[in-house]
Image (cartoon, rainbow, N blue to C red; front, side, top):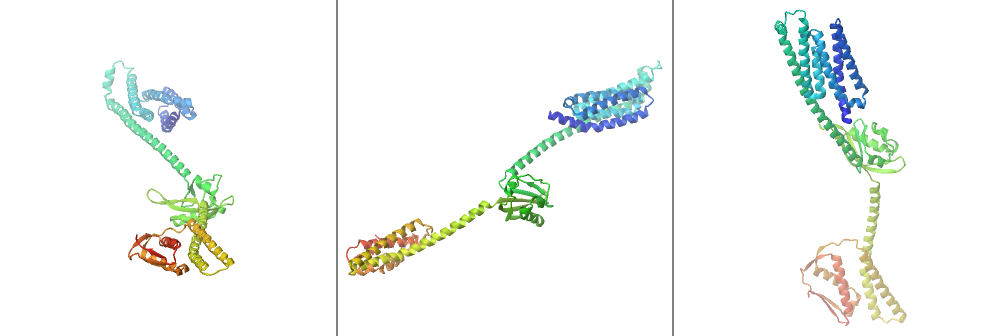
Length: 471
């Protein structure tokens, strides 16, 4: 039904000017042949047919549209017949109404293309020849001396104009049919292109509406061309507003900072990247936006506006706040781990010194018990610090090249200050110079300290010897 409707509309557009021209010519012909009563009757007949067809076009009923093409071919054939009668009654081959045949041929080509144009041109030629035949026969009907062959011989001068008219009808049919075929092909191509353009527009509109970012497009007069669904959601604009308005009219009150920024981008004609703007929605919520703009240009690179894409930074701001808190906690943890590490090393010396004093001094039971409490609590505090350092491994392992001989000398010098070595235990470093390893220097230092302290505890005699070297 839709195709039929389009066909009817095309016929209306193409044929309505043609009928107006036809009626105008008929009006002129009435003046030329007003003395011929029969011709007047023919004009009235054709006028009634033309009015009936025009009424059909204007009413535009679905049933009429379905039969429009069939009615039209009948109407055109009627035109050809009436045109032949009018030529017969208006002077035959000298009639000025021969042009009516051309209008009928052109009308058929508009709807039926080449096939219809050639069919009507053939019908027009036949109707024209018949009208000429009867015109000549009627002209000499009172003189029985003339036969039809004699009539033709007596009017040999009509051969050329009649032949010329028939050739004209054929050429008009060919040309009009060819043009109509091309127009139909162009129409089909145009319709296909229009449908593809509509699909592309719908597809583009769906993409823009489905974007996860807000999008506003404005021209250089600061009128909004497009605003997508995400933009309205971010800005809290629930009720749709007309796009045919300026940025100031659309983004007012709390949205004014965004409107000012868009106007600035349009006036300065430049791009912005992640420019932060804070707007206040109609519900009172402040929303930080990261806005990026780019120039909107025509295919010939002529700027016509700007495109603004923006995101809601509310969640990003919250995440940044959490990260700052985490950074502070990490710094505190790292500082605490460093303090605990610095406390544990002297704590080992304190604990060892108290053990030496406990063994060498003659203490009463109360003081000895106090010494044992100091040693016990020092060991407990050392375990707590060790567990804390194991838990708070915030500082990443730093791998460097370490000279083991030099590191061992430093560890031996550090432990030699422990009072327990006054009992005569000696530590010897036999590692050759030049031996190196890759690792965390502080962790390897702690490993050496723990190994040497364990070795000291394992030596029973007062004159012990601890040797550090390669096995």
